[in-house]
Length: 412
Image (tube, rainbow, N blue to C red; front, side):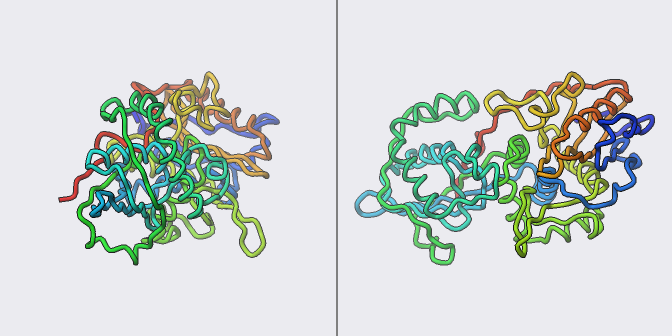
């Protein structure tokens, strides 16, 4: 984000009850930059459902604890058999976007090492796989999981379809990552595919290994926020929760009081607890503090909020529009709104940063059922009151690819 982010911003808070549309806002709050005072409705300290705005919380937790340059590693173990075939084992790290694109990239690396016939392909409980994970409906729009049967079936199908699909994969992917030289053709046969627990697999009995690393974490966070991907957000959240409680993190690092947030997962999708549907919830104040901290963490790590949250009107054509672009793109927000949407049956939410001529305004607003108009009016008022929009400088959206030129790490 540009240098003026931290300067004094808003001259006065927009009074939201001035029109009928604005009156439908359930809660709202805004901040005059990172160090500005919090202003807004009287209930801004009350915890309310935030739906997919939860992904901003997950993004902050990951950015702070893992670092935006973190890469999810998949260690690949090779054992050559007397027949000339190999046994290959994949030790995962819960990378949520290990898909056909990543798998075909892996096959190219296996071919480079002479692996073209696999006797047994195994993977552990931390290995995630779906052929088209980014668009598979029950992964994007629900709290779906890939069963062991589905993982095996889709791996098998992608091996079988290699001959007909690989050329298309190269044509599409090579243009997105021209710095990676993909082989023009590959071949692979696999006899058996099965899950193998970490407790059972013995790395000492293998001949060699290498590490297949994902693209940097900020790329994963940008994609899961762009497409509001529930499966990806939940997997990142679960990965972090193995070593730290989310409640402890929020209290220690964000200063959030227990009564101001209540989380069940990393996506905001509802869960059933004791026969009752429950949602992640947070106060308006807490959401603002999370967006502020995410901005600081991203800036401190050499990135900006633009590399994590969607930018209205600035999505890569290869990926398709973000939920922010689809719902909130106007002349006032084009290339000047960095935000995450949230939608549930009883309300809609939006949280992020509006870039104005007077500086950045951090905000969160929740409106009544499907009432996007009141939030659009809220945004318009903020931007107009602060001198109009201030579009991003030198920003060009980059299409998501799960690997890059630094994804292969040799093991000495």
